[in-house]
Amino acid sequence: MSITYTFNSTEYSSDFIGQSLEALLLDFETNGAAGEHDSGNPGGINTGGFYTAGVASGLAGDTYAQSNGEGFAFSAYGSLSYNFAAHSLTGTVQSISLGSYLNTDGTVGDPFITFNFDSLTSGTETGRDNAVHDVIWGLMNGSVQGAEDSAGTVNDGGLLALLDAAGLSDDIITTGSASFSESELLLAA
Image (cartoon, rainbow, N blue to C red; front, top):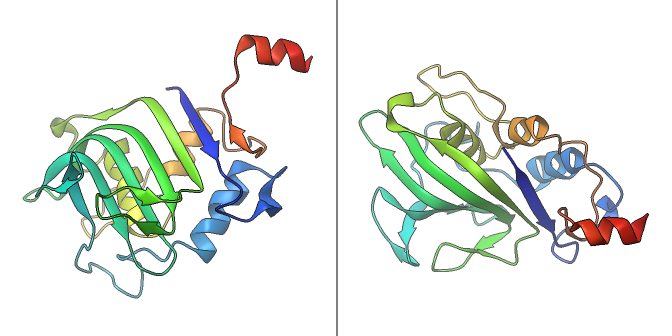
């Protein structure tokens, strides 16, 4: 799987320039990502929701977004659906943005980082044990490292595990985009 990201240091501490992507995300988890299903609210009511073309849309949509109102928000864009009976999230994720608040259309206002995925897809046959569910469930719980659930579904490591598998968790943070054209790399050499 190919993953690219864009980091905006004006929306998060510029102290992370030159540090690893993993360090940045773990700091966000510790200092900004309380989540809503965390230990203070285990199994709590989900205050996030689905949106289609910026309009709230039940149990499926092109965006799933959540904010706890305390400095943590995320928005996953793609084609997503939630099976209430199985409590599983499936579909395709094209991008995930992290920031501190949500706009009324489900997008993150002033995101500090956005990840773009070329192929993060999970079908309904996978139930809860799939990467889409693992990443988003982790973020719902305020964790970039995934989260266990009450049904005992294995935590596969969440967003950090995907970044590690793509070779990005040790990536050094710079401003702008983590993907470069061949001509940009030649100029840098």
